[in-house]
Length: 298
Ligand SMILES: NC(=O)c1ccc[n+]([C@@H]2O[C@H](COP(=O)([O-])OP(=O)(O)OC[C@H]3O[C@@H](n4cnc5c(N)ncnc54)[C@H](OP(=O)(O)O)[C@@H]3O)[C@@H](O)[C@H]2O)c1
Image (cartoon, rainbow, N blue to C red; front, side, top):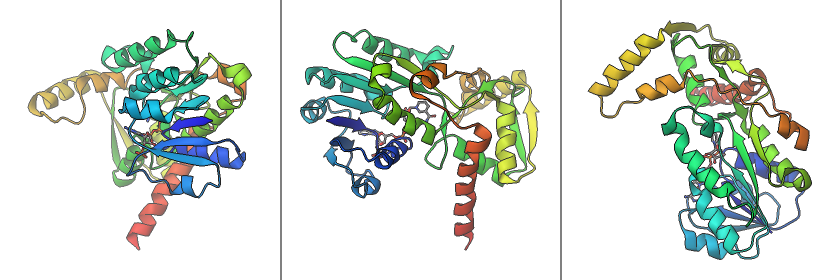
């Protein structure tokens, strides 16, 4: 039996889509919450068992993992220890954990906790089979919490303030590529068991070009206003000193300058991972945004 967390989320929905397309026949036990939207699960036609509870609840996890062979844990890394403890107690054979490339940040506040959790779990690989998937920034629809804000901002404003020179490399990954990758990892156990994979978009893209791509997809002529890094940091410092609930910290401004160019060669080799480019992938998200705007204005 398969046990899945986070299937109602942004990438979990694409995992479900792939399970449906591939006509997966096994039992899939899914952790959902009372307020989760389970419409897609209910209409999937798959052999789904819903179990209601929170991943914070260790007793719930232990009791619902009875009889499970494989876990796909899509929901947050912050629940990974609870999931792994319950899995080991139930003699689960394999856990596929969706974590994050955030562990590679040079800023401790961003990476420290992820490293501690992930390395602690990896030390237990004699008790359970483990596969770690590490997405970069996820985008693809209104379900992301990053790119949709940028799309909205560029649609509503002419000028875009950019901290620093925007030359840093990024490699965002489309939610569909990720959701489908979860499935391909699952069905390629002979190659993916006890491996770690970074999952990113097709090519690295400079942050400034990413902003330009969104503008282009929107059909907008935004003007990018570069704010020198030294001035950005100073401004963030003053803003944070004056505002207890500041929306951006000095460290976040600095972290934006970090290169986040993580390749996916191992994933291509082991399960044929072949993600879409940002320029292509962002078109869906912009289309969704513009359609929702048109509906709203009617
Ligand atoms: N966003 C990024 O840019 C990014 C980057 C790197 C890695 N990641 C990681 O990649 C993974 C997949 O991301 P995603 O965008 O698909 O996530 P998402 O859209 O935020 O979905 C989270 C899922 O976890 C469920 N969930 C949250 N708290 C729960 C709890 N206490 N008990 C039970 N279920 C709970 C949610 O259920 P409901 O439907 O009830 O809300 C939802 O199904 C996550 O682990 C995320 O941290 C994200």
